[in-house]
Length: 196
Image (tube, rainbow, N blue to C red; front, top):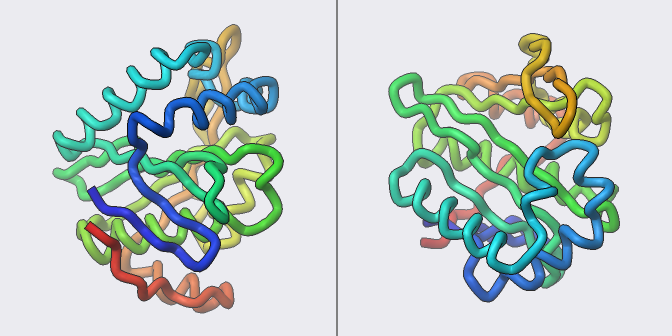
């Protein structure tokens, strides 16, 4: 699976078994924050939970249906980003992401999302990328907005989160609009080639 040197600070690659302790510690340090937005946090308590997650995501990657990458910032694990689903027939994917609170506000996730969106359009020839975000999760919403994604629709009761449903705002980007959108936003197109 591809690995990406986004720039001198940010690096994306699939998780390896040896990443499990750092991943678990990052979740522990951010548990209450992450739990507010993500449904899997309570199921991530021990190393074996993380290792099961890594193996499951690796299996999906081998099938070509989903790809998950860790995000490293200046050598430290900062979060994760993934193509949650790759729909080959309709050439569409959904990007999901999370970033530890201490790494926010540095443009890390914007750069990571830009890199994976480039990869989706340039290398695996998808036609559409969606991002689904809870309406009141403004830090996550600002990323597709900054990158020129269109606010596509509002989905009520889109996700069950522990004891209640959460609505989603769905942002979308189509391949034919991607490069003009990032240029209009003043963002340089990604030109780096992924490492395999």
